[in-house]
Length: 318
Image 1 (cartoon, one colour):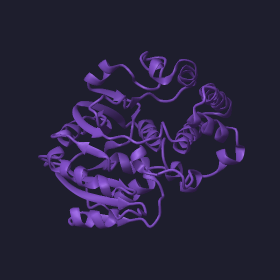
Image 2: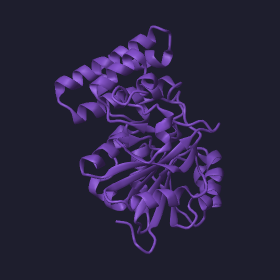
Image 3: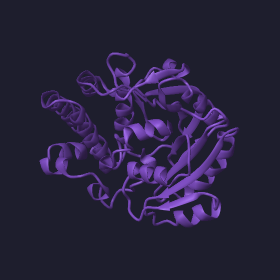
Image 4: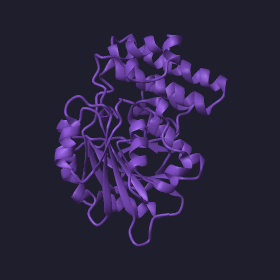
């Protein structure tokens, strides 16, 4: 439960080559967290662009954690939570996020409701366009619909798609199975009960896994339309290596939560989706299909080595 006298929020920002993004993020925090008690934890995943030096200059009061390795988004979150001062909740942020005024207070208000473990805001991109950030738990039907008609088209129908793609749904407060992980306020009680974030995902699906495991324990994820944030967004949909990791982790996540037979059907649906798009000449889908059809690469633990040096491995891709 949150402290009655006003909760303490630890803001945990995960950096990887984020020097150019930090100033605008930090400038948005006082207004975004107005009226709240908060502290700042900056976690650096072995940046090479001077992110640590910029962080020390711009936020000398922050707790700075240097992990010494690029362990991925989940590993950075876990390191930040361990290093954070005493807190009632953790606000997890990508470095390319900008909070709008009052965002934090709106999220905190919802966390006070019984059973809520995670609160997420309305998210727009750098051009002010609504991001379809709410998601339903992956199912075989959703995977088949994505393969045949596309995720966004299927998501306009509540029983057919994983992505909540009806703009009207983003106007009301509601429980969602999970949400994209660039901005998440999590109670310390929920974080402790779930046992932290699964670092084996490296990038993508780690927020899905965390929210679903929280839901298994009775902690709801609630979307708050009156809280707003800007996420400049990454390039997973256009980078073949990153998209391959998105697809691989979707399959891995589903297998962890389901028996073998439905997992094989899910895998087949994902292969079918990538194959049909690959036939259209899309290199992202060709790369994902090659990975899906390689047993050794599917078994390989996710990490920067599985993406390769040609891609910019930035957690802003979240």
